[in-house]
Length: 439
Image (cartoon, rainbow, N blue to C red):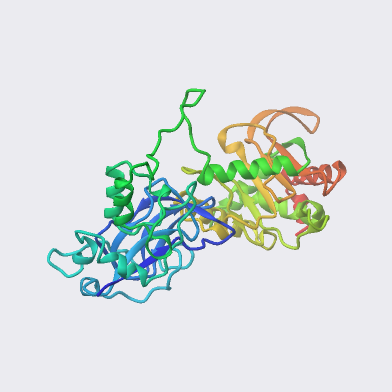
């Protein structure tokens, strides 16, 4: 006889406590193999596919697409054995219950197979009543019923869910009589026979006082909103800016790219300038430990950079940027940008930054007042490089001019330090030879 195993949303790492179901990759009745991705979820940091550690027949799914589930909530139940193994072809051993994008081999193609008619497996997946499933579920760890206000409902059988839905019964208001609060068909039928309402019908949301389109602040957008709000609440920031003549920097880049080899990006040159400036002004490569009431100066520069994707703005991090040259930085920026636009960044690629470089000039704007990427201490913003009138060597000329903006945490340094950092960056932009002194 098949044993029904419950697979719960695993710990996604980096302090994440919930995820939104974006797309189901399997349906009830499908046969899944061990480590086959079954659902695509969006966390506050990345979009990932979640593989199931069990092989067998999918008997239930928990949560519709667009639903947020906490870590530890049930995702699916799988009937293991008794016909399921007969319909699953053996596959090469995988990495073993890890998230796709966190180490699983991407070369394996996930297979989604429907149970063959007449096989033994459908007897478990499509039984006319939940009785064959409920005893098997009792053998597997069961999820305690969630509070009425949040979380998934402790129901395994899709037939029980359908019965409740057809009669307008809110399963969250029921107390299951099964193992550890599992809601059975008998519980729903008892609610229907009760002289007084036991379950509360699902009510329509209260009409909003203000009309208009409402967009939930969740997923990536919600994470960005929370981080920016926290930055404004906790960090006493200040901004200084300067215009710089980038003509010589652009000429130096053209000369580098003329000799062949991988192309050097403007962002990579600015990043190399930033790492040199942080070596001179380490106060800006730090963070504030509020619990200890201390400023922590960090030994390595993990450089974040803003990348626009279809999902919104993300900030991938280049590790140990201070040890990289312009060519290595160009390659890493290109790699992380490509992964970000494909929606495959892992949480580890988006955390741990110590300083952020934001090139908003790609949007065709000259200036901005960057908001610090908490818990960092500073962010350098770069506007577009555009031809403008400029006094060069005492003469009015047309030069390539860029505005540089530095927002810094006033707790870690005063204006003199911030101004010194920004002035050094501007000097390197105007005369790249200045950078050679620190190489």
